[in-house]
Image (cartoon, rainbow, N blue to C red; front, side):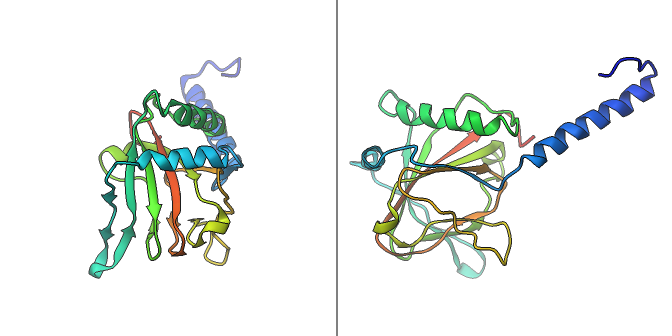
Length: 209
């Protein structure tokens, strides 16, 4: 608070101005997404994919209006454990750095990661990662690309920031993309090959703030 302000009304006005300036500074730093290149090497990406061995996938198929398929993918859940701590710890370092520009109120509980497989014809239409109940607590989304560009045709992550703009994010194996969970994005349809990704949502104890 600046010195020399004694009137309560003036203090309240000044406080609102200072809060507005802080918020404006945050938005000046805002980007739809940030990429951290080669965070995981190809062998590590393969190790992450192998975590699904012996586990049955959850069928991630959701139908929207008029029976149209909104999401079609195979999902495996990856809990935080002694065997997977190296993944969660590395992502936490990235997220902490990313969040220094935004100041989201994050919980230390990172929950489970979602290992997702997209085979030919599978996709996930435009959506946000926010929702009701538990998803309302999501603040930051981290996506690890586990497949190389050469191994998949079609597919990939798109982040919406303009109808006349190319929205596909240029990712290769081991790259991590981070974005606020309220940002619209989609997994475009795979034409051939298999695309794998690992998704982690960083949450807080209260809805987005």
